[in-house]
Image (cartoon, rainbow, N blue to C red):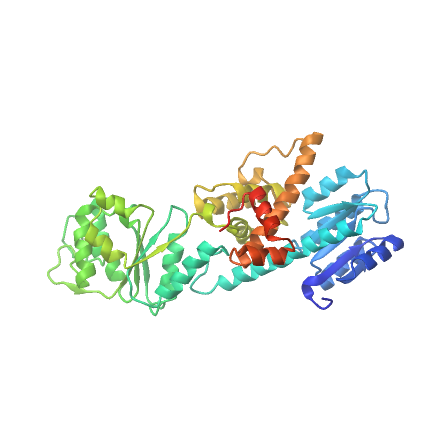
Length: 457
């Protein structure tokens, strides 16, 4: 285990006796040592350890936690993914809570219980490794074709695999999903992974254009075709010649225009308004809708024959609430995206914010999450994004003993939730394999999943 780069453990402790005890207790790891804040920051910069145990009572003022808390902030500013476990005295609960609020992963109290400390360190390394694997998976997905599609859940991976299979073909494809799920991203992926990637990708939202203008937008018109037509204009279909045409919200296309669209799909010729001769067009059609088109057919709002033409292949995009483990992954992706765009730097999210992100239903799907994170990056005043920064109400300001206990319990539950969801995702929700990775029995894992509200996949 010693040469594993994900196995480096930094122990920041000024007491030689405690250092010796920790060296013996944690000898399964690649150990690094520091006696003060300066040495700790040097070790972080040189070795980038995955986990740090940090005594809050550091010189030059070992009786006060200020130096340890300052070290915590510096460590997380350099490497936000590092899991920091703070060491406190048995009557130092307030400082432990402050450290958790600053981004510490967990804490333990002196005198040291070797078994408890080993458990916390092992859990910290597991989370660090899983987050690194998720980040690598996310970066791997950022190929030219799948740029912007972020997620490790079974549901979103299945949709991505479908895109990869369908993209090289000429099949007319219907992308189905709720508003805000990212249907246009998948349409663009179909184009960029196809032989037509170097040709135009033209998009048209059928719900955004008035009915009396939609036909001319699609098919174009000749000079003099109607009042105001002072020159010839190519429609979206013709503009996409050789490439792909994306018809968003196809379910909102007027019935009167659906017959002309069906004729084009059958014959691959268009007639400009006021034109005298049909024009051949080579274009791949990709459609999307948030509506149930089968219900629209029953209500006579959509032609059944057109539905069969546009749905040679269906790709269903799952709502964010059903994408187990993806909410936090997307939140981190958007935080990095908007931080870079606005020249800001954040250490990440508070535990309460992560729990809110993971438990919220997100009726507006990925678009709503993206908007909330973008807003938070602009408005947040601290170094971490909190619940209030995301636009949610928060009761975190309560300072009663009961609320402090709840905060610690929530912190631990949020950590367990993150670890379990990531392990399940890595193992495609194979509970036996996930339990083995987590070092628990299958019944124990099932109980934890039930307690934390995690579905079986």
